[in-house]
Length: 508
Ligand code: ME8
Image 1 (cartoon, rainbow, N blue to C red):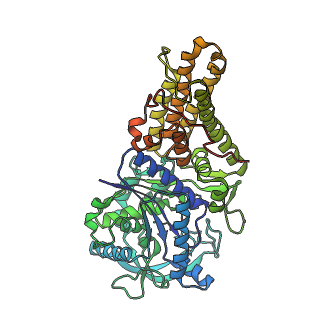
Image 2 (tube, rainbow, N blue to C red):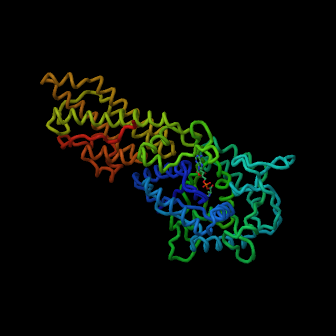
Image 3 (spheres, rainbow, N blue to C red):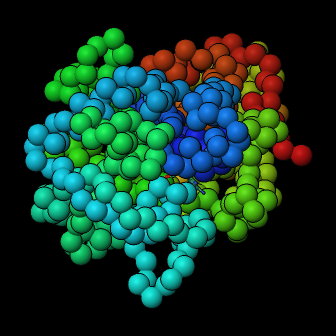
């Protein structure tokens, strides 16, 4: 049975930025890991194309919303392709099949008695597409996220009766694993314990949206529509919408990976909508932190938005993937610093890992006839083998918890141990005595074998580097049977080693 994992469905108000790239890279690393483990997964990403924000952006450009959506959605597809993102689905919320599912879902929730007509008054942020709780005394409140002026709204809307699910949602958000990381749970638990209010799910002044069946002039609120993209992405296009059949297609999601800004929608509104429709809930919601650039919030007006496409062109995807996943604890906020980025890529990937592999291959080729050494010598305890075994266990455990930084650290520790081992054994001195050749063969084998394990473990985070390393060892095919080869001793003695080339470029 397949399981799905998802990124947010990004607004197409603009092309992808470093923030959306960050969530997508992280989800991609997790997807790659699950596939290596042999899981049958469906990796979903896509775009959220309706709503007032998109309607206004298109109007400002003087083009139709659908033209605008086509342009920006294409950019997303192109960029994810360049980053070698391995998504299985790309959902556009303007697709016909999605529209049918939204209508079907609404009718189900309505039949359950969870929809009512009412009046919505409040301060609205178009950037967030959300009503904001503001201080009553503030006559011209601003959005705390976008810093723009909020707009006053007073209109007839349809409401989803979220308050009917107070008890169930309270139990859910308090449960052990639903909200990850644990540190984000409190904020949601506090919000829920204040009492859930029904939320409006339709708009009367937004034409760029899916029409609500039976309510002329109403279009669905963009969030009600967008969250359902997680379901419509899974249904085969040619099939009629069958909400009861979803488990056949990968629902419930194993995890929704999102930023902390949209945790409330995913941890409260979304599960309540699913409960109302009598559908299964996602297993967990992971709210990661926000990136800043050199200590400042990224924003157009600040002129410090990092263009991921440019980064990719200059540095290649592995360097940026490594930096974002190994240096920022997944779940906490992080800062993009150019100097630190260059330093880490050079020291971790080029030196500690790449250089270790290449200099050991060079020694092996020189002293052992261009091959992996053959030996019968053994020492009682093999410290590198023990370190590799610990690392394998740790890294799997960390990947399972989406603790990418800790996984990378453990891999790096193994590579550093192998460097220390070489420096400690000094094979270049030992080899001068013929009688030491067996010993040297054993040491070199241990280091090469550690490199092989590093190359398998690191694959979800830096797939190119991993494959380059395996190619250098003539073991590329091992990636197709990761579980089998992920233990000590699968480097064949006597196997040929080709001349080493750099496995990752250094950043000048
Ligand atoms: O909210 N740092 O779309 P969106 C890290 N359409 N991640 C960031 C970030 C930053 N500075 N800025 C954005 C929406 N993100 C809705 C989602 S889902 C059914 C609908 C990432 O384009 C982060 O994942 O505004 C955040 O949650 C998401 O982009 C918001 O994307």
